[in-house]
Length: 523
Image (cartoon, rainbow, N blue to C red; front, side):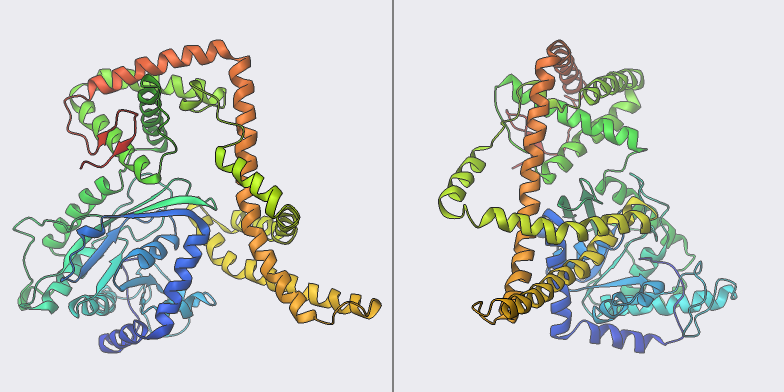
């Protein structure tokens, strides 16, 4: 997805008409429902915060960074409470199936100046005159601007590209130009708003990970930027105002997404967040439980803000503390432990699993194990194929989730259907050999297909349980064999916690810390 480029030869009115057509009808709702189901299946949990920041009586523009390919617009589209129009790179419309979906969602094709001429149409290529490219680009923006002016929301990723960096790529001015064009089309009506959107993933390329979609309050524009372009100020493409607004958007997004200089610093901030939480819980002998992605993002925001504020006034102390956290992190990783493992070993069997096992033994002892086996047998080859296909087809990590999500929508249902057809064929053969077997091949096939899907879901759940059990055993063995190292790290964790909290005690950090170490929004 991109926000900069040139549009094809169609005029603005025809593009707007296609947008309006795509945004109507049951097919649009069906596609959004399908995408919501796909994100529900891919992620273990998707948290949404900040819905109360969205004005109910305004139109506007959503802006976000772009770290996870087509998953990013999928999350915004399915979690934003109103209809939203996206601008998409024209090449995506040529992908079989995807192009149909994009058109039915009312997506506006964008022909970027860096892209080659499309096979169909008269879109200017990268070597066309600048004036032609600007005119075509204006038609693309006009289509999105008209949707906003008519009362809808549009969404852009101002970086123009998806990436794997922990910070923003260079922002293009397309979002600012789109905003001012929509504002001009609104005339005397209430101007549109700009809503920054934070997209956060714990392991973005991994199946059954977690995601957070955060809608932030509308931008408060400086007086010099909070203006509606005049008729004689139509060319905002290269205007100083558009560049200044882009700078405001960039500054805001940097805070919204909690950008860091590099992944090494990002990982150390996450380690600092975890060690402080674990140490606080240990001191009151509490078990705060698993962190949600919302708590992780808020806790990281506290560490990040404190780091950058202290870096300006206590540079030497911050660098010294960073080195100590890095050494603690290396030692902890060498033992393959987490901060909370220093205090107690995780239970071998969580209480809910014990209850489940009893229920299984009583009610479904003969059903659930075969169902899980069926789920593994049918779905594992497809899962391995999908994993290998994503690894080979993804240029960067940010492409893996997109490939897994889109290909999984096709491959897994196809696997279940294939298993059903195979079961039906085998049933017919068995009936021919043993006539006493009821002649119900279609029923056998349908039941097998359904059980393959249900068994896959159970298999995923039990694979997680098995992984947790294996980790519990490993942590217990490590704690017993390396008790001296564990004791030393507990002491160092306590010192680091005191140093971190002591240095940041005068800083107004977001959220608040509960006695057991959990970070939560302020009441």
